[in-house]
Every structure is written in C-alpha cells, then in structure tokens.
Length: 237
Image 1 (cartoon, helix red, strand yellow):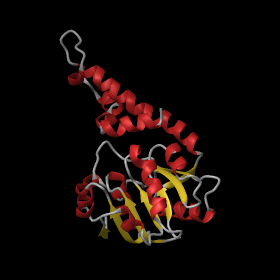
Image 2 (cartoon, helix red, strand yellow):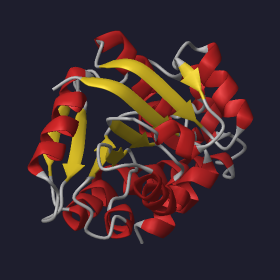
Image 3 (cartoon, rainbow, N blue to C red):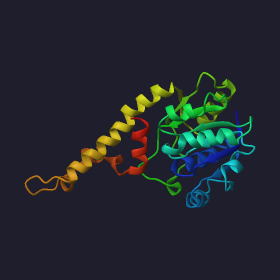
Image 4 (spheres, helix red, strand yellow):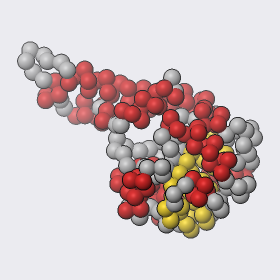
C-alpha cells in the first residue's frame, strides 16, 4: 500500500533517515517535515530528506496519509497526541520511539495510531548522519492496540517493509521489557565500563590506553547522547 504524502515530525537522525529511505524507496510521493528546532529542520533539508519543510505540526500533517512522529522519547507521548489531534481521519499516525507504553497510552485508544520502533541507529545524532540504508534488514517493532484499525496497521506494515525493515508485532509492555534487556541495559553497561576503565590506574597503567578489540566492541555505544539515554531510562524504569 503506497503512501503518497508522508509527514515526518522530528527531523533528527531517525526522522531524517525515514524521510530519505521513503524517498529512495518511492514509498512516498511527497515528504513534508517539521521540527521545533529550526537547525534540525535546516539540516534535514540540506541532506535532501524533505520535499517541503513547514513551520508547524499542523501544517505537516494536513492532508498526510501517514505521519511519523520522531520526537525525543521524553516528548514522544505529547507529540503523538498532538499529531492525532491535529490530523484528519485520513491520516494514520505512527512513531519511532524506543519505548512504547507511554506513546500507546497517549493515543488513548485511537483507531488511527500504530506504535513503532525501528531497532537501528548509531551513537551519532542529527540529520547530517541520516541514511536511507539504516533500516535495511532491521527489526521494526509495531505495537498495534485492540482498537487499531487493521487497514491502518497494514499501511504502516507495508511502509516499514518498503524501507527494507522487517516488521514484528508485539505488545507495548512486552516491547519495553524486551528492549530493556537487549538495548537499554547494554547502553548502561557500556557507559559504566568506559567510566570505570577511564578513572582507574593499574600500577601506573591506563586501561583505556592498552585496550584491545574486546573493549572497543563492548563500548561502541558508550558515546551516545546522554540526554537521550537519561530520558529512555526514565521512561522504561
């Protein structure tokens, strides 16, 4: 099922990557983008992710068949609610947040909302690091609710597949428990390990200076934006 008009709310790394991948896959004939941060919107335009940048969420969702909310996790629930309130019946709303319980609760049983989470990304941030290939082969969790219209679910499922990802349906609470174990805990451990190694001396030797591939592999994600991860840990405590 092809999307002819896509709205992207939030044009950071993942939002801009969704826009780029949609354009590359021809999954959307027109991509409209909004971000409350003018710099983020400008960066997405510079990457060629958007057809039309707009100045408000209301402008972005007007006439959209699908709206993808890519706000920071702490703002996700409010932005999902705002997108649903601002859009018409023709617009299906999904999100890309790494926690799902609060966003699904904010949808308040709307038939037009399908929660989503692409399990991909990097320690980098910002539209300047966006990539159309980031979703290739990635798991993309979808969290339909009892109230979700099956037609809306098929639309999001088809869109995700067109971007190269593998959609997997899961209960919102089960999703949050899964990613706590497989994503959130590893990030916490990676930062703990780097901090411990960086503050320790062993008989005058600096552990980080002597580190090999094992430490690098285990701590690749330790440089991720701490503000983002504080919000994720709070949301999925």
